[in-house]
Length: 378
Image 1: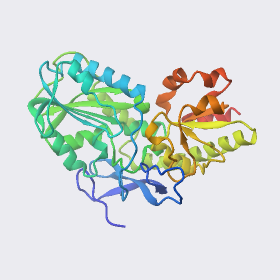
Image 2: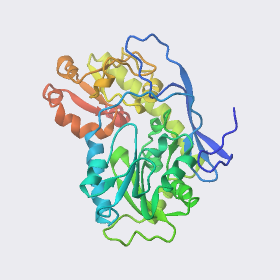
Image 3: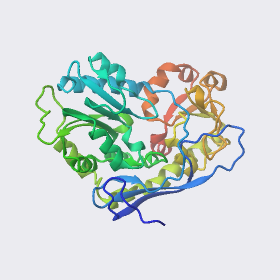
Image 4: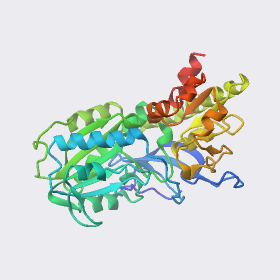
């Protein structure tokens, strides 16, 4: 294997902390009638010993994921975040904003223009430079962050939102590791990356999205932004909380390997028990993070006949590495499932509201993250 160099600091010392083996490309959804088997690629997480950035070890795949439907939880969180940042005095009226968004959606532009900020063309400087889940999609983390900080005006602010590595550890979200997502951030790693550009963290906000995300505000050294108004969580408190979760400790991250087997086996056993009992099960949410979970659980269409997804772009396709088709929500009242396996926990409130016919017909929504507890309760 080629020696690894950290995607952020270029150091070559680190530890392999999670290995999901050979997996199909997480973002390539074949047509349902496309013959398999799908190509498989290594999927591994490496932790840098120098800057503590957890990262994808290698990725020979090419991003090609069909556009998904934007979850209501993501829209609500964006509005909440903009409101909090505005209350902290970090969105100057008449100011300029640049946004680096995720290819999966979640733009804040509408909310920011409502705050009387104007969007600047690509490459131009801005008073507010926002990255909402975008940075993780860059293979060269050092270059990507350098491009963002270079656009921050002299007294401007950089806003970075990321799925917390502490959340991944605490909630055993090992399937957050996927092709095309090159970095998994602790706040300590982000602070280290910013320090190389002489940027300092000034404020932090935490949100329940994806089980726990962080929005970090930073500025150039010597530019104070924390006293401009409003309130935010202490950066020190967030760092201490994440340190207690062991996010910089390779031994702690290696514990995710054990949860791979436990969660995958629990899901397989639950699906098999539902089939044996003659209960109809559908999945909901054809997300890329479900790819490795379904493969580890040895799930196929005999156990999970279909996965419902709101995105028309995914209808007629199948989950990578499986024969499980992706179908329209119109299938829910037709198939009358006894259980709908929710593959994205954040969708729970909106799908219950959108599809009341599931529960009216006696069905139930089952969160995939609670399958182990469901099995224990019988």
